[in-house]
Length: 450
Ligand SMILES: *Cc1c(COP(=O)(O)O)cnc(C)c1O
Image (cartoon, rainbow, N blue to C red; front, side, top):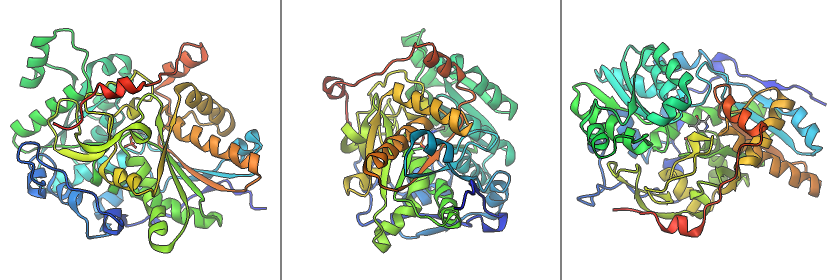
């Protein structure tokens, strides 16, 4: 029996193109539309705030393969390929006949998959003569990745971090400052939007909605400044396909092919990144792999949301996107998987879900921490609370295999490590964490669309 545990690619085997699933989807996603004119947006519209190349990638439904710029590949080589790992100890602890593999995206210095998209976004901005980038961040993983990528390409980064998260997770701000970024707690006095919010409510603790409006305002009022986003959008999922393209080669090294592919789900970028290259074989070659997106029970847009045009942000500043949504003013409970507290699903994934090419599962917070702790004690890695949703879903599948005696091959994404989330683990171990169920009334209360 082959007991090889880790599968790693040579630098020369790292994929040199991203996979754009839009070109091969049976039904193409509907276009984003302008809320006032109701007209589909063009890439020129999007290029007012995003780097031009990202704006073009966002709407590209024709090219299945997009070359990764050499300058980005060069930076990917600092931490890629990431290991594909067979979780033998977890399998043994579960007593399952399933083969469990995980792709470990926690091994880069920033600790999550987000840097895979931060690097190209900053590279394209730099290429186009931009000197400054800005963004919002909640828990701080995206802000940290962007700060690093900006420093790599010599850009100034200004990050609006949700004020309450800044107080709860001070080390993420320290990471961003170490890479030279400027951090503002949002709402701040540095923008008009922020001043208006503070004038209305001096004690406002901030939200992604306030932070997005401040970052967009900065991008539109500062010369040579572009706005960047760490999830939800099509070009972000495109950049993340490096995960699945590597995993495909690594699974071949292991001599297996996944029957089930699982990732946690916030806006869909790490899910799409791992899943799309494998889903391609379902679409083109009649493979029957099952794709599962694991979301929190407290923010169940895939399992209980509606497919409608809705705003991407709480305040309603973004274009309208066709997506599964709980309503742009849905207020998720304060769970520790901060990266999964988002009301909507990305446009591509929403269409795939509608077409039955994938499905969602919703998982209670306590089950995710139990899964995270079992994973830590067996595989020796403390997972991010977000990633623990994927682990919990993989454990559910492995337990089903134990009941049926099926030897299925399960592949999940470990999107990040949890070493800056240890207060959450302390709270769980002390018995201070809870589940949060959402009632139908909670969902009905929110607004979808204009
Ligand atoms: C941001 C984040 C997520 C959720 O974002 P997706 O776009 O859905 O991938 C998941 N895991 C980690 C570690 C994150 O930082």
